Image 1 (spheres, one colour):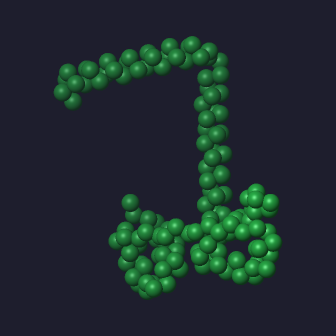
Image 2 (image 1 turned 120 degrees about the horizontal axis):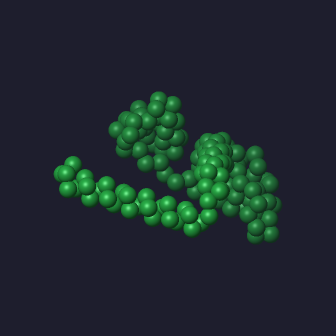
Length: 142
């Protein structure tokens, strides 16, 4: 799969930031030849009191993709400090989830007037028709 230009640029930058030993040209080569494997960003869990004195440094570490930070209070994970890219991916996943639920609701609404037994009967008939088509296609040699 060929990535669109913007995605390729983002991957090159991500690889470059995550691997300071590689030159930008090397990172571009890795991405363009599909040899890129971004390292997993480690997640660090801190208590709120431990995070407080580090609040001036933590955003920089997150931006440089050195870590993601989870903040816990009394042993319960309550917040996270993640990069804007991670937040955008999370928001996109949420939006896709909402679209998926809406699509399922629309499908459900189309069958709202049918009982489960009617749906099961229609499904069985559709499977039988598909099996007959497959047998005919095999007999004809398609």
